[in-house]
Structures are given as structure tokens and as C-alpha cells.
Image 1: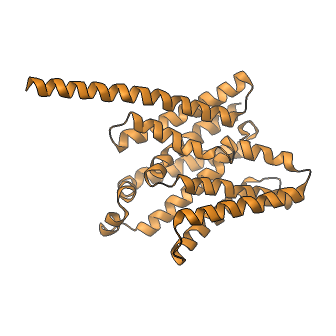
Image 2: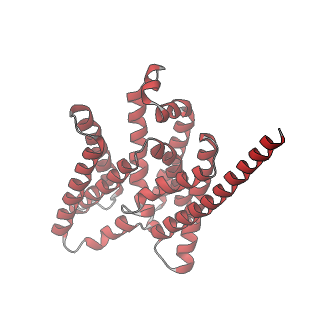
Length: 273
């Protein structure tokens, strides 16, 4: 339970921070493709008799990400077409391997739906390293990432190395998604990248506020979801997602109230003037 809480406190804010830029750049489908591609990596790891499946999962996710970038740069296909192609292909490949494995299907269940209570000490250490690297990298390149998310061509004109920054961002996103599969599972991991930033946007006035609120909401959803899972004996991944959705609804109501109050104050000020 302590390892699960530590992993959630590290991975959930990391996903929420990256999610601010993922949603701004309309890359939610990209993260979903990476997550589903990891299924083939897990299946290959089981097939080859590997005891630690995180390594093949991360490696195959990186392979899928590299394939997306290569096909995008060397063909005229649209990005969503490329991702749909690789998502369906990697899932089909993984399912065929799972069929051949026969009796090993139970081992895959935790990766499909999340099994954070099974994380080991080495997973927590890796999550801590990933947390430090992602947070350090994001805040080091915050201005460049902000401009890149808002207007890629303008970032290029301003002298930012767009290609290198894109590759670094995708590398961090891919590794984070692959590691977070232990937290939420392949099917639900995209929710932690999308829901906290969306909830933060309901109550934020600028990007910096959205980053802070997104990280805090991601942290709250991760910890509260695990506590709820323990108390009510339900799966961790779905519990975290439902808590995230609940926080989104709360922020939506609060945001509507704040916007209404702001409009009323503006109207009163204008009338007084």
C-alpha cells in the first residue's frame, strides 16, 4: 500500500503535468496509441519468458512512437491516420501473441486494467527518477514548450529547435505513459493525461495556473483513488479515473460560478463608470 501511494504520488502529477501540453497540442490520441502499443510489448515479454515486463513494454512503446514520427516525416499520411494504423496493428499483434500464450492471460490482466498494488521498490525508484527528469525538463524548457504548443511555426521562426524539442517531449511522454500503465492499465492510462488538465482549465486564467492546478488535481486523484480502492475493495485504476472525473465535475461547477461572478463584477463596474 505504501509503495502504491508513493508510485501514485509520483506518476499521477507527472502525467498531469505532461497532460497540459498533450491537450494543448491535441496529442491525446498519440498517448492512447502508445498505451495500446505497450500491450504488444507486454505480450512479447511474456512470450520470451521475461520476469520483468516493464522493459519490453517501454521499449515497444518507444518503437511505436518512433514509427509514428518516421511515417509522418516520410509519407503524406495524416497524423491521426498513422496513429490509427499503428494502434490497431499493435493491438492485433499483441492479441495474436496472447492467443498463442494460452494459460498466461492472467498475467496480462494487471497491465490491461492496472495493478498498482503489485509495484515493487524498483518501480518506485524509477518513478521518482522519471518525476525528477520530467518536472526538471518541463520547467527548464517551459517558455519554449509554451510557444511550441501555441504556434509551432512561430517557435521555429524564434530560433527554437522544434524538431529536437518535439523528440524530447515525445520521449518523456512515451516513457511516462508506459510506466503509468502499472497505475491505471493500458485501457485507462490516457485519462490521467487528459482529465486533470481539463479540470484545471475550468478554473485557470492562464497556463501557469493550469499547470499548478493540473499537478495538484492529478496528485489528489491518484492518492484518493488508491485510498478509495483500499476502502471499498475496487480496482485501483478505475477508482483513480472516477475520482478524476469527480474532480472535473467539481471544477466545472466552480469555474462556471467564478466566471459568472467575474461577469457580474464587470457589469457593475461598467454601470458605475
